[in-house]
Length: 249
Image 1 (cartoon, rainbow, N blue to C red):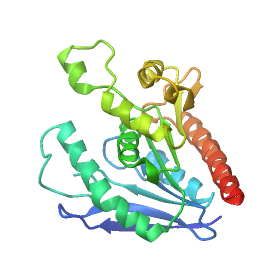
Image 2 (image 1 turned 120 degrees about the horizontal axis):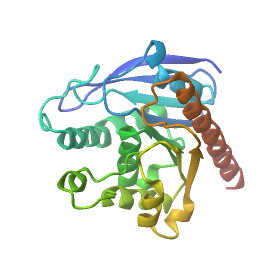
Image 3 (image 1 turned 180 degrees about the horizontal axis):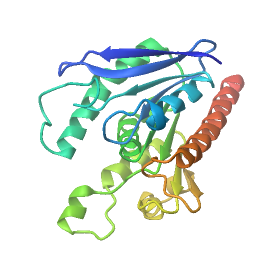
Image 4 (image 1 turned 30 degrees about the vertical axis):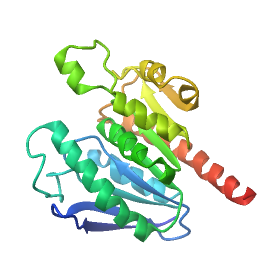
């Protein structure tokens, strides 16, 4: 399936959020918001992972939105959160939830909605999708980072897992599927996350472990291929599940 890339500037009270919508030219089967790890956008050359992934997903009939973080790339909101990682993340969450997602959903139409991301973007997907899980048709996470940064810095917990992440992921799993792909060299303790989730949510969380690799940085072509192919395969399965559920209703 062919596609078109559309650079966009999404208006918010803090300033425009820049991004790209990758639109299939044929039938559109779902919509997805795709969040990279925190940092500057990488859209070309060996760093074009997110561009290639969005286009691959568009080939499945998914319209994909990927945006730049606050004060990166084409996104230049000002105001709260000018100092500190967490304050900046809070601003990103608010702008996405209140302005970016409504803008995208209105234009993409009423379709199954997927959230996906890697590292900090995977954590972001959990927090954002878990705020309103009724709108979520599936969550796909590459090496998520569920740590409680405050507890880690304070030395309060040698294995900090953020309870906000636990609550939001549990809310997602009450309604739909969540999938994690993790390299055995990645630092996040997903087994501890599942322990904190508790039953039955932990049993519903799908975890795919890739041996002899760390997926966290996605900085090598073979690692990118591992992550992309596994995510694509899982999304194909989700699309089929949604198709079957519609045919039965």
